Image 1 (cartoon, rainbow, N blue to C red):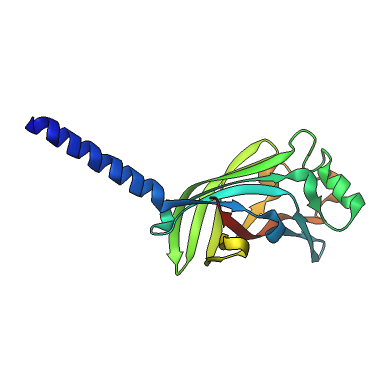
Image 2: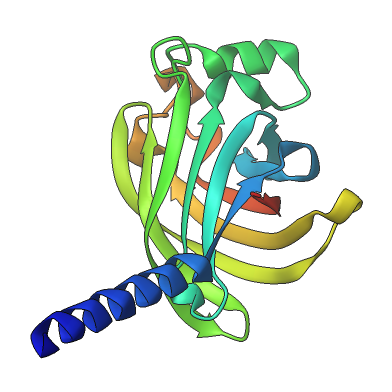
Length: 195
């Protein structure tokens, strides 16, 4: 009888711990209306900006231990916008992103490392144009707070620099050195807690 009681107590304890662990993780859904994914690339001697306007994703947040958090996101390549329709059409073509064949890019984090007050190095796999590479985002937590109609929000900033050649987004040879290789990415995210 004693062993049965011990087994019951251990089971109850394990269940409580599991419930506490799952309660610690909150899922936040990215709000694309109040978020942005922007980039800049050198064109001859200046930098040309652009953005992706359609994307989605979730952030699983452990507020007590943010290093245990994770993020997954998907970007629709066809939503690229550089404020020039002709250029956007060329960027979607096979010379660059080949959006018909590779309509999305995805990011899935693998590790979060604290680098300072509310800042983290978030390492993950970026898959773009059929190529998967490990990238590191420099992420800053902007905070948590109330939103409209009782919503709970989280805010984030992230930056990274990619080499477009790593993902085969080189462009036609005739462009030569007109375009730089490095692409600076700036991400601003507002995400709402999933009920």
